[in-house]
Image 1 (cartoon, rainbow, N blue to C red):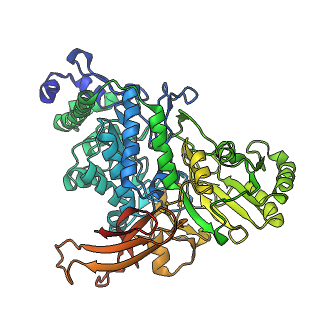
Image 2 (cartoon, rainbow, N blue to C red):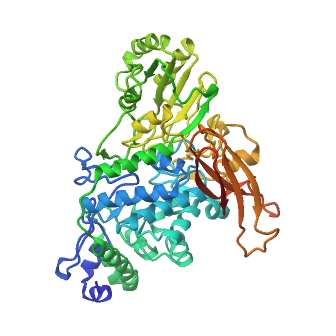
Image 3 (cartoon, helix red, strand yellow):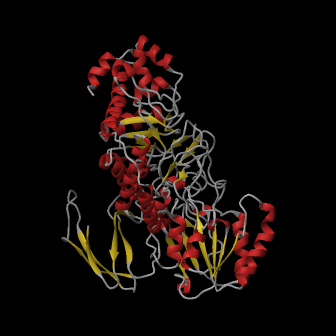
Length: 614
């Protein structure tokens, strides 16, 4: 496509049309110049294709674990593989750009959209976003890195102004975007709804021009979040290329601004160029593919297996071994909460529940519903039914979690609690049985008031369509859990760094905690937590030895290199996540106690030692 030639042949009206969507998901083309319309769609954990905004008629696609889960795998290679599988299904459905990943920060556990984001740590978030983008785009499908920037809450997201200092902006909130832009070059970026330092993100010159393009050298397209454009002419002037969805209703404003000289044709043509470059990229890589949904389901299963985090395993209650009578309790064992609410909702190509897979691995299993997500009036009778089977079992496995009513796009969580009927069920079961294992389904940190009463806790996140099988495999030891937390589980919401500032008032949210987000706060301030960042148990054990620096000292421009030996000292295969943190002891500024700088996931057979080099 000769882009400059096309621009020279476009009418003013055609140029303006190219800067807005054709409808909910298609971009405008220019038929007379053979510029095609291309299709974009959600989302961050699989292809959500629908006619317009009709969420009742979604095309089936592989529903991968949500970002909160995928990040807990700490496996960049696997995340790239999942990205390639999603790209395969994009080609299948004629989609050119997948609207993800989301790499906003988990500033507070109450963020309603936390399940769509990777971590409270900016480096880990950036590394995961980079891996995902590289996987998708390697197959000729574009991504949209979102939501740029400082869009860390749902409350008043369409108008609130994020006020934060330069260190917080540069050291925390922009880091994952900068990493992904420089290391993965996403085809598109998506501007956020909120304001940052007074200006809406989609018309924010500091973000879109000064930082994104001038500092980071970004050359791709910047689109708005759906309905995020407020002042159309300002968006064009300050760096936004594409308004979504369409059709827009501000064409007259743009044409008038061109005619009266308040908007330059140079600015307009620059935006048009980015749209045409995206269309050219998409059409160049377009191909007909028949997706292998069963193969992609296997990738989703692998991701789910590696995302599960074992939080507690008192008396080695897990894995479930021997001829045990097992009581499985909880509606989520048969109706899994496999995804979060909002724009990322998908129709899974397949869906496995935990109970069916548990029954494949053990025949000595009884089940009780325990609660009903829709009929709260049946709560007492369902608990009584559950107690009857619990009393006669050797081990009780209880499935509990959050619900779409608790966490979703569009609103933040009211508290960190699980669903109340789930807690009531657990309290009752712990009164009659001491060998209880809890399986959690949630998109962000939750409080665990039952932690001392149960022997096992398995963090199952929102594991996508294959999560039920992965959970069963972990419970019975067919898979050794290898996930680790990418967010701290605090004891209370009152002990979190943003408490008192989040979500702010209707017009303003202040980031008074500065750079002290997540573990940077808890470690530096000595605040006790339920489970720390980077934590996760295994069915085996690992020992670190022989840490060696390549040399004794380095100057400021040199890369630090070192090696460490890791041995699997247990009896089964396992995977360890080697996490490397640094501490600045010389800075005149207040610095966190430690900061993650690199990590690697290592596979080790029983008794095996590997030397890991960084």
